[in-house]
Each structure stands twice: as C-alpha cells, then as structure tokens.
Length: 288
Image 1 (tube, one colour):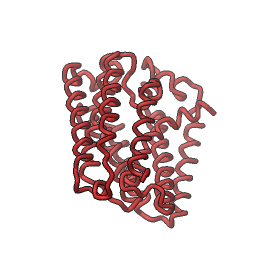
Image 2 (cartoon, rainbow, N blue to C red):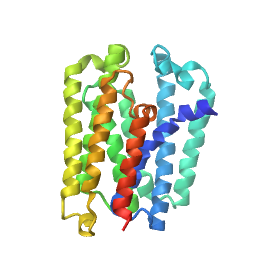
Image 3 (spheres, rainbow, N blue to C red):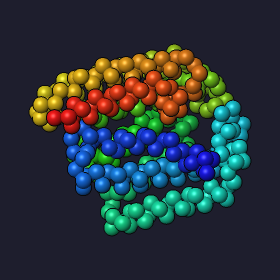
C-alpha cells in the first residue's frame, strides 16, 4: 500500500491547502456550505493531480531508471507494475467523475483541474525542455489551486493574495531547479544546462524577497475586508520572514534536490515554523 501511495504522490496533496486559503483569509472557512464546497474541490484536485503524476511516471519510466533519485520511484524500481499503475489511473479518473457527478456536473468544479491537466500534459510532452517556461508552468500549478479555491468559496481572489502566491511559487520553482542543477547537473533534467547556479541563486533571492514584500504589504493594507474588520495581520509577517529564510537555508546546504514537499517533510524546524504561522494566522483571523 505504501508504494501505491507514493505513486499517487499523496504527500503532494499538501499543496492543495492553497485551495482553502481564500476561504481562510476572508474569514469564511468555518461556514459549513463553503467548507463543504472547498473540501469537495480539494478532493477532486488531489485525485486529478495523482492521475497526472502517474501518467508522467508511466511515460518517463525508462528515463527515471537512469536517474540517481527517480530510479527509486515505485514504477521505475519495479515495486509497482505498469498494469497496476494504469488501473489506479482508471480508478482515480472514475472517482473524479463520480464526485463531479455528485455536484451535478457543474463546470466550475472541473474546469480548473482540466486546465491543470492540460498544462501538465503540455509540460511533460515539450514545455519542460524550455528554461523559465518550465518554472512558469510550475508556478501556474500553485496559482490555479488558489484561483480554484476562490471560485469554490465564492470569495474571488485578491490582488495581494495572487501576487504573494505567485512570487512564492517562483521561489519554490527556482529553488527546485537550483538544487537539481547542484546535485545532478544536466543529467537530472535536459534543460538544466541552460541554467547557471549564479542565475538561479539570484532568481531565488529575488522571488523570496518579493514574496515577503507582497505579503507584508497585503497585511499593511488598511482597505482590505480583513483590515476593515479590525484584524491586524502584521503580527504574522515575522513568521513568513523566518519561514522563507529557513527554506533558503535548507536549499543552500545542498543536501536536498529542492522538491518543496520533501524539503518541508525533512525539516522539523520548517514544520514547526509552519505550524506556528498557521496558528498565529488562525488566532488573528478567528480569535475575536
């Protein structure tokens, strides 16, 4: 069972917490109907993303077997058979259709997951070969989750939220490319020969800095609905600052290939800081 969960990239479901963010930041998370809609959307997106991961693994299985790390993946290592992987794809696709059917095939539940699917298919087939475009597609994956959450919660998406997550996603994407280049060179990914460590270091620093600035400005804006409700989110800015610096520190130690999920799960301090940030945010937003 463990290998099947690894094949589905269940750990990566944590990225889908972004779907909840618009509801959280508009103080509507605990409205029952909104929470229900967002949870259903998160399940659809999670299963759809697993389908994409598995299809990519099936397509790249031979290439992954030559990779120092990807060779340990369930398909590449032979711990999960190709027919079994295809069966899981069919099962998850059927599950998505059933959940969508439960919502009477409302297009709003499936449009963004389908767009995410199309982008990732294009990425896998060709776009991953182009420097910058590859990181741009990775960034869109995070932003689409955010947009999806805003649509499902009926809150829309604020400009500050969009800018902060866009910058943070670029930070994660460039950080991943930086450490892949550092650890594997162009063996790990063909387009890595187009990057240099100096460029990727600068890109990481730029995107990290703008992430902190955008978040701080969003908290300082007195014209937001949250600010008008008397909530002062400035108290959460130091937590974002230290989280970004800790993440950059982990990247710079060169012991990780920069995969965001692996970075988070392998560092107890980053997990602790994340919990502290979420606790501060929830107390500020819902404590009064």
